[in-house]
Amino acid sequence: MNNIFCTKNKITAFIAGMLSSSVVYASETAESEPVSIWNGDIYTSLFGLILFIVLLVVLGKFAWGPILDGLKKREDFIRQQIKDAEGARADAEKTLRRYETKMQKAEDRAAEVINEARDEALKITQRVTEEAQAKADEIIKQAQKSIANAKEQAVRDLHGYSSELAVELAGKILGKSISSEEHRELINQTISELENSNG
Image (cartoon, rainbow, N blue to C red; front, top):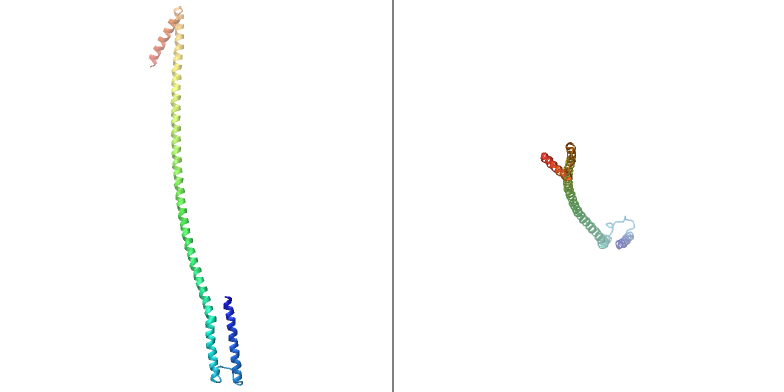
């Protein structure tokens, strides 16, 4: 850019010098007439026309060419920046779509994991409930069995005690003492009769 400005300054100085010399030349040739390239002789007109053509050539080569080249480069730079920005935007949109897809997959997987955890929790709850119910049933069966055994033992004890009382009572009624052999025999007979009557 600095080269363009230096060239423009040189061209401006050159043009100013050419114009001043043509004005001086015109004023020397015709002092009383107004200054114009078409007033006066043919040499002045030709000099003005040549000066204009030289000015166009010089401006075309040193001013307009670099300026147009600079503008073209600037335009190409701007177009490239726009193309790069569009490419970056397209890349950003692709990245966003990929991110959204990953997020959707993550959400789907999270929902799947939650459903699996819920199903597993239900299975565990059901299994624990069934195990607890089975243990409770086993405890109830054992308790019922213990109660039945205790009841049988209580009935046996009651029968034995009743038999002893009956034998003692029979001995008192008969007025004789019963030997331990007879006592045992009476107790066993009474227990078997009671069991047969209960059974």
